[in-house]
Every structure is written in C-alpha cells, then in structure tokens.
Amino acid sequence: MGTGQKRAGGTKEKILAKSLELFASKGFKETTVRDIASAVGLQQGALYNHFKNKDAILMALIDQLMSSAIVTIFEEKEPAELYKRGKSLLANIATTFKLLSFDGKNEALFRLMMQEMYKNSDIRDLYHEYFYQQNIKKLSAVFFMMMQEEMIRSSDPLLLANEFLTPLFFYQTQVVLLKLDGKSTSSAVLLFEKHVDYFWKSIRVADKEENGDMPYG
Image 1 (cartoon, rainbow, N blue to C red):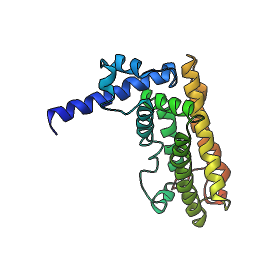
Image 2: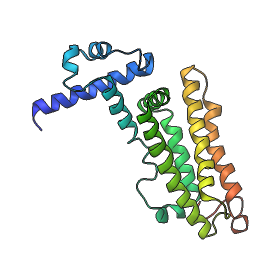
Image 3: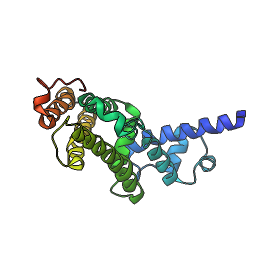
C-alpha cells in the first residue's frame, strides 16, 4: 500500500472516530457534515472524497458494530463443538456482554445504533439479523444438542435461547444508562453472573450433578 493510500485510510478512520463522538454526544440528526469536517480538520468538500454523505458515515459505523464481539460471540464454531462446554459457554457469553458495556467505542456504537434504529429501516434489519437472529439460532442449536445429550431438560430450544440472551441485552443497556448518568454500576454488573447461575440451575438435569457443578460446566 502506498503512502497516499495509507494517508487516505487514516483520514477515513479519523472521520469515523470523530463522527462517532459527535453522533453519540449531539445525536445523528443534529450533527452536520460541517461539524464533522471541522472536528477532523478538513474542508467540507474534502470529506466527500471519503464518504458520499452523512448517512454513508453512519452505515460505516454500524458496519463496525457488526464485527463486534457480540456479533461474533460464538467464534464461528459449530454447535457440535460448543455444547460440550455447558455452563461455561453461557458464562463466557455473559462476560462478553458485560465487558462490552465498559468498552468506550462499543458503548458509543451501541448507543448510536439504539438511537437510530427507530428511524432507519436498514439499521433495524442489521440489528434483527446480526444481533438477534444469528445469535438466537446458534444458541438454540447448542441447547438442542445439550438436550440430546441429556445435559439439560427437554424444552423448546428457541425459547431457551431467547430467555437466556434477552436479559443480557437488558443488563448491558442498564450499565450503559447508569454510566451515562454517572451512577454506580456495581449492582447491575452482578446481574450477569447471577443470571447465568439462575438460568443454568433452572435447565440442568439435576440428577446428573451436585450443586450445579458438572464436568462440562
């Protein structure tokens, strides 16, 4: 890659970084292209060399969120590999949600997505497909295999996946809101681990373990 290409790439990333700051603080609608260009140190016309318009910047930022740890939470592994981890898999998923609540960039991206989701059908589609459907489908397949191996009680795996993941999104939102208001997040943070313990105890096959401690979780 030549020097010019590197410089262009660096400018593009700077535009995205400054845009995220402005969108998260002022809101997407209230932020102008002139605001972004000024924050980056560019003439407004020069910014259009990198992005067609403000909407293109927004979608580029949302694309970054689509590669976040929540979207890739199952590490591209197949359910046949994942189900053997039992409770520890659920604990790792919960920990991912918790840690991302304290990652500044991911927090800002998540806030931006939540703000714009009600106004932009493209963002709603991305949220539904990548944040919701893919994770729900993968986790439901994992739960189905756990049932086949009698690690957990027989039930509706799709419903179980929803019941496990939905509170994690809620707890993550709670942490973000508490941080936004400068309040303590201690009690909200504990909910991630408590949820895993409570959920696992409610679905495990009790006669195969003592006190929730299984060789696979």
